[in-house]
Image (tube, rainbow over all chains, first blue to last red):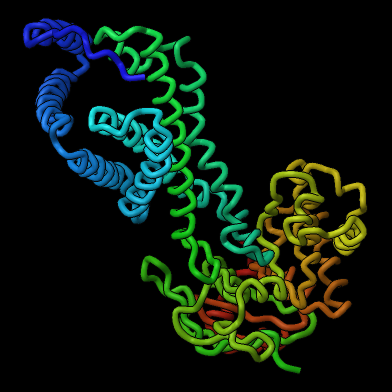
Length: 258
Length: 237
């Protein structure tokens, strides 16, 4: 069900007025001596510049007269950028870039394949670009969690893992309980979010659609599909990262290397 | 009879570049209990871990019953050379679950037999492996190793986390197993324990085997480091 495109425009004045809320944050920082004034100003300025740049880029890409290949190029770019971000955030995870790239690519194939392959959303730039953005954006943080968790699990449980190896288990069998635990840790928050959606909070896509004037029922249906997309993406990336990373933490002759 | 293990100029360099083993050349007989003795940090545990390839030498070679360890299938080797660690490492689940990890598909009779060799009765099978006492848990770990039908046992200071009664029990068990033809390599820093258990000892000091042989050989060793170690042990901590 395609969302209605009629909606509100808040314009530059609206954005300028919303900065009053930033001023409130700055006042709180000043009164409470939080020393967050500088970081808040930088964050707000940066977000504005980034969003305007992205908006301009999206205007170019989502234009229906342009080829869809441009949108796919954009999807490829955000997958690469997400992998780079994961590497920056998870410096202690070996070869985080390659793993995050593989994980995000796998999640993209699985989730976009279902969403567009089954015609849940029409394969048009207007749907492809934001869907891929949400999928990668959400999966990215869980990629970091899964990566850090599997390294920590194998380090903390080193004695147990080696006891399993000493019984003649392969690295894969010896690591299985710890891979399972790492994936569970990574996925659980998203399961909780999915369970609480609508009751505790209204998620971004739905809020945005309603603000833009779309019928709430239509907005809810779009949001449901997006939530399931994110859940599928988080599960896929967590599994790829945990299994892929575990493989690198063992030698080919089944020795634990961390 | 071929030696159980033969080390030829084995060096191990740690990931931080430190020398953990500095040219170990020694043999371990395929009978009885051999104790690897020495102060903390001498490289005893590393030597033991090399024996079932949880670690590998940086240079040098190791033979197990004449076969190069580097050429052996590590999974098969580890089932031939069982290992019991310093601290008990019970896995999640019941004792039966633990035995199942070591021997998938093992029937109850096989499990009871393995427990029996560790002097535990069948009632342990359904107990939570993580709620056992230290001594019981270490025996379960021994039973878990024995169920893989190893031809030799490596024991890495297996009594250091146990109370005196459990320690005595485990030492008695080791003597029984050795008496039944299971060669055992037992790492300890406790000279008195080595005297109780071993016919032969390897004394390691600072990453090398300073002396190997009977206790008479050790006592007679002119090696300064060995004499210092023996003197320190006699004086007590």
